[in-house]
Length: 304
Image (cartoon, rainbow, N blue to C red; front, side, top):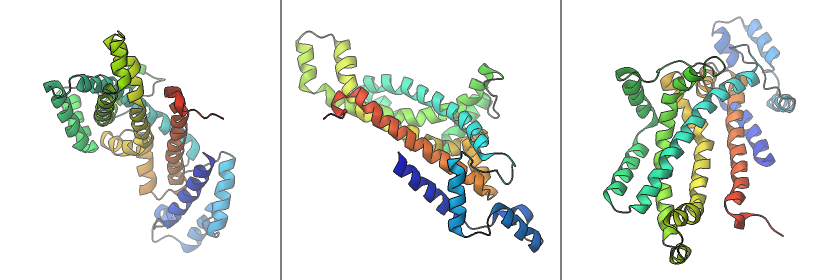
């Protein structure tokens, strides 16, 4: 994890430096007093050479300091952790819902291959994959939030205040996430399971009198789940980036909205902190995925 993390830290800093615009100009306007603007640049270190700014940022990172937001006047680390927990709630509910839908649907398609059920589910997955996430989010907010007011469309309630209301306020964004994830996972599980069911060891298990349930859920599903697990891990890793659009539709105060705010205000410390958190989540999830491979398939484990 260390080399990618070092590369990410460097790239995040360089990308921010390439963004056109000056945060001091954004804060004070174009008609600001040049002396006051110069004093602000000196205060935030913008008058230093790029290498010195980079080294100061790395030193602060090593002490767990992501800086302070120019506009919000709050610690970037505290803001990122607070918003990450909210976005994580959407992602967690979305992942659980997608697996609850995708696993039975994928197994049904594989066991009922080329039947009406298989063709119907496969067609629906293609539609869901083709639909833009923001359009699906708008449809859900209209039908389930306005026409049939099942869930609130806007706002957020922390779990610490009201657990039930907190879950309800995150359901529409979570369903938007789950629909896209479930469609991709269903198709991959169907294809992978169809390949495994034709293997000789499945035929041998059935010939030896193994029950159909055990042959499918113990022997076939575990071997078919390796590529599916890889896909789900990649989806989880990229989920925070995709949630940006969905949070914008529902005006949900998560990492996505914080990221958009940082870009709009040229808030360099906040923008750097958001990008670093996004990248760190992806690196950690990829690391955990590599570790969990060995639990699913012993052949992957390192040996002497």
